[in-house]
Image (cartoon, rainbow, N blue to C red; front, side):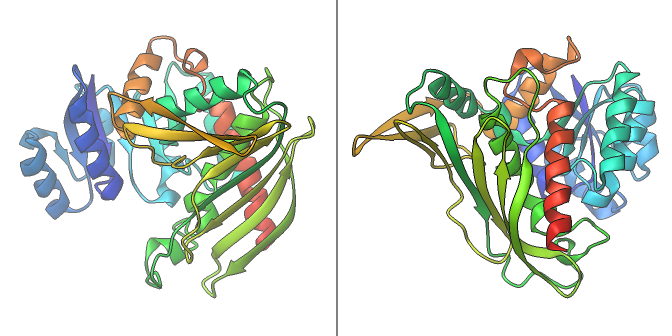
Length: 330
């Protein structure tokens, strides 16, 4: 598999480092509007000069590249996904994959009429820890699922006014940056027995806004028609616990590192005043696991065989809730 990267920011570096863990995968080309970043990537990752592209379309026109990783700013994702599909390149795109529900629907429809594999980069869903969690829940270790509590927040230390996080046009704010994590986790857990994913109703929304028009933090309650509900929270101004707890009729499961689990991670089962720690081991880092799953999925062009990783339907449903959450704060 020959890969190309569009956008050479922090996530692109993580991708470039992670792909080195995999055999039969090659970072062949990179594209950026910054000549400095192109040259830096060339020397660090030994990329041939002819595969450095300052024009995004030229990397898409390169017949030697099979797959594209999109690591650009949020507001450019939609146009680049459509361009990748038109160029017949498989796409791994950083989250959020779009900034409006119309864009989400258009990507979904465009994929239906193509032979392209697409995956939104919500990496924890392809890590073995998430499969382990689903197995524990289906084995009824804590009984019937009643409630979920899921948080992700960090203190960005007064993000710069002109920076990405506070820029509305660039898709900034806590919900676009972090909301996909607790929402997608809640959707996954609440739907483990459902063939068709239930989209929750949202209520009890609170949050803090910045004068730039982006949300700095947000809380909400998600209610599912099967009786399960979830309390979610995100923030870019406060360090939150960053865990997920699943409360059942017979106990509670706690995921200590739900979003960026290491190769060795721990899930706790709290039951009858006792705590049992269960380990999950992975041969690959979280982002290498995601790339590996992507490669394995290309053959069948769908994600069903790789559950609980994200499908395009999962991504669209997750975004529906995110945008409703965000607009409720605004």
